[in-house]
Every structure is written in structure tokens, then in C-alpha cells.
Image 1 (cartoon, rainbow, N blue to C red):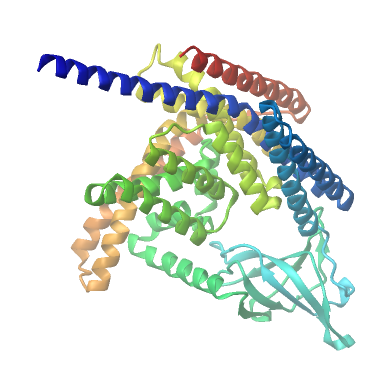
Image 2 (image 1 turned 90 degrees about the vertical axis):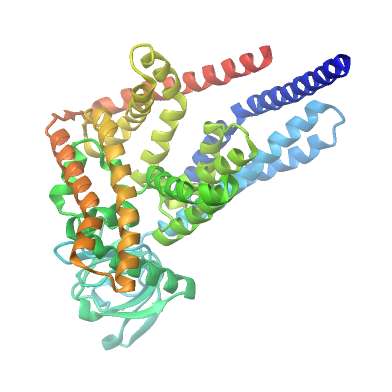
Amino acid sequence: MRQEWLSEAACRRRQLYTSVNRYQQHQYRLERRRPALAPAALVFGVAAAAAGSAGAAGVLAVAGVGSVLCAAGIAFAALPQRSGARAAAAALVLGLLLILAAGAGYRRAVNSRPAQLGVPVGYVEQLHGIVRGDCHPGLDGTVRVELILQSAAAPSRQIQRVSSFGRVVLELRAEKGFYHGEVLLVEPLRTGFRDGRGRLWYRVSERRVRRLGFVSAPRRLRAAALQRTAESMQVLGRAPRRLFAALVLGLRQDLAPAEVQRFRTAGAMHVLALSGMHLGILAALCVAFVKPLFGKRAAVLTASAGACAYVLLVGLRPSLLRALLMYLPAAAAYLQGRRVDLVGVLAAAFVGVVAIDPLSLNTLSFQLSFAALTGIALFAGPISRCLQRRLPALVALPLAAAVSAQLVTAPFLAAGFEVLHPIGIISSLVLVPLVTAFLWASMISWAALTLCVSAGLDQRLLVALLRFLPERLYQLLTASAELFSAAPALPVAADRLPWVIGVLTAALLLRYYHGTRAGRQHTHRE
């Protein structure tokens, strides 16, 4: 009996050793492939930007190089050696990425062309276009609507519906917002003017704007759902509702300028911008409610479906789209019990965002989002190991992430605003947990209040109890932001930016090379 038990234990040890060995070999193969992910994404981004800036010649050049690489990959695949197969795979992947970059560059060049009306600017009496993005009136009622031009007309001069292209920005005072995909017929008040990006600007009156519906039924349904969601948040009360709508739906127009400025000077503007933090908080809330009832797999699948629906509802903003494209592979790896290569997932998300929306390359939201995640992926580990020698892990890990993100985003912030707020490293440690608590409390209170109102249970005492925690957290959050906003700012001269960017780029490359090399050596030793 003892011999059978010993033989069974030896068999289990052998199986465990075999599974561990296979896992280590799999991780070694992943580490060997890892160095190619980030450089390939960087080549894709540079090629898309160059093709979009150079016009038709750049697009043809990038597409030609990609086609040559694909042909070379097909030729390498015919070689019998194993090295030929690896070279074929690399050439095919890079060639396909360059062809995709050529397509993204073409779309970027077409969408960034200066507006052409087909009618003299001074003669324009009607503009027909499609709203490019959601926009809502602020506290003073003013709103800026960006239109993708379809046609222009001047009926009094016998010029009827001439085809147009480009972008037009409308300034007006309105009571209702405008939603992506909405079709408008506009009668401008005055002659427009061009800005440095080739867009035309017009001032109009709300009564001279005719809403002609939406380009498709899904756009109409999305706008109705977004409008009803924003209206239903009024049950939270005036002040918490404004912040909750800004954090969940991105409707910052209802926030007072002093509130926005308070978060900006506190170095915590990323708290108000919809990003992976907000998507992660909402997904964690979904998992917390579903997992005890239906298990881990159902919770992760429900959170993934909810994340996709949330991004489609709010809009394909660069930071949210990046977070979604990173969350879905991470959720799949979590269900399979595998580790996630943050740099590789970030590189794949970069390719996906640029392919979907090439114009996002020029936006500060896109640049800050990817810069912050790049800093966290490359620098957070070494910084946290240094901090854990003196601080507990509960403080060292978020502090390392804040320092890493601030380090890499500093050049972009300095180039855009010529001022930095170093207090953001400390304020993030306080404001991010407060925002998380406020979002969770507001989400639960919002759902409970909505159910109570729909059931007719709208007694004052019950409403006051459900509003109590969000109101107190809102007061604590705004008071903390005001406290940190009193810290001094750091002006940055524009002539020093090239040196700062050069040194930071060199540090990023060295850190990435050192990390991938150390990872391969460690995996090989194991």
C-alpha cells in the first residue's frame, strides 16, 4: 500500500514538473517575441503619421514598402530552414502593418484637408453637414459644434447644393446638446474665417439650425440613451450630479470653470478625463456584484460586455478606446490563468486606436494616455522596488505609478501648457481613491434612487439617506482638490523642451532594452 502511494506521489511530481517546464518554455517564447511588439507599433505610428503628412506620395511610398515586405515574407516562407520561417513571419507582420499604416495615413490626410465649400466664403447661406462628436452647452449656454461638411448653398445667388468637404466649427447658444452622427442644416449669421488647421468657423443662431435626424438608426438610439442617462442622473442632486456626469459620461460642460481649474492646478486633470481608470472602476463594480452570484468567468464576461457597451455609449474617445483594447486581452488572459505583457498589450492597443481613428495622433488626450501607460509599464517596477525598502507596498505601488506617469507625460504637458504641477504625484494618491469611492457610492445611489422613483417611493427621508454619502464624498473630494491646488506650479521654458524630450526618449529606450534582455536571461536560467 505504501509503495502504491509513493509511486502515485512520484507520478504527480513528474506531472507537475512537466507542466511547470511547459509553462516556463511558453513564457520563454513570449519573452523572445516581446522585443518585436513595441518597435513594430512604433514603426506603424511613424509610418501612419508620415503618410498622413506627406499626402498621396507618402501613402504610396508606405504602401509600396509594405507590399515589398509582404512579397519578401512569402519568398522567405519557401525556405526549408527554421530561420526562414521566422524571417517570413516578421516580414509579413511588418508589411501588413505598413499597409495598414498607409490606409490610416490616407484617412488622416483626407480628414485633415482644409475645408472646401465650392462656394465663395462670403456667399454661403446654407451649410449641410454631420456632427463629428458629442457636444453639450456649458453653464453659459454656449456650445461649439464640429461638422463634417457635405454640401453648401447660396439660394439668393442661384447656387444650389454644391458638394463640399472638410470641417466647420459652429459657435452658438443652445439649450440642447448635439450628438455624433446628427445631420444639420445651418444658416450662418456672418462670413466665416479659417484657423491654422484649415477649419472654417461660423457664428450661428439656434433658430437657424435645423436638425434633420441621424445618419443611421444606431446613432439615433445611442443619442437617445445618452440623453436619458444624463437626465436620470438628476436624482443625485445638483452638485454631485455634475461631477458624476463628468466622471461617467464625460459631460464636463456642467462643471464650473473654477472646479475644472482646481483639478488642473492640483495636477489631477486626468481624474476628470475619461480613461482606463474610470473604465476599470466600473468594470470592478460589475465584477463585485456578479462574481458572488455566478462565479468568476461570468463576472469577467459580464464586465467585458459592459465595458464594450459603455465605450460605445460614451463615444470612441482615444483614452477610452485604448483602455478597452487593453482590458479585453487582459480579461481573456485572466480567464486562462496567463500573465499579461503590459508593453505588448499597450503596443497592440496603439495600433488599434490609430487604425480606428488616425486623427487622434494629433490630440493631447491620445498622447498623454499612451505616454502615461508607457511610463508605468517601463519605470513603475524599478521605482516601486526602490520605494518598498522604506515604504509599505500599499503606498509604494501607487506612488511608483504616479511618479512614472508624471515623468513621461511631463514633456507633453510642458509643450502644451508650458507649466507643470509636480504636486500631482502626491495629489493622485489622495484623489484617485476618493474618486473611486465617489463613483461607487454614486453608482449605487443612482441605481437605488432610480428604482425608488420608478416605484413611486420618493419620500424625502429616503432620498436624503441615499444622497448622503455621495454628497459627503463630493465635498471631501472638492476640498482635497482645493487644498492641493494651492501648491506652486513649475514654469517650463519652451527652449528646454528638445533636451528634455531627447533625454527622456533615450531613458525609455535603454529601460525597455534592459528590461527585455533581463527578462530573457531570467527565463532562460529558469
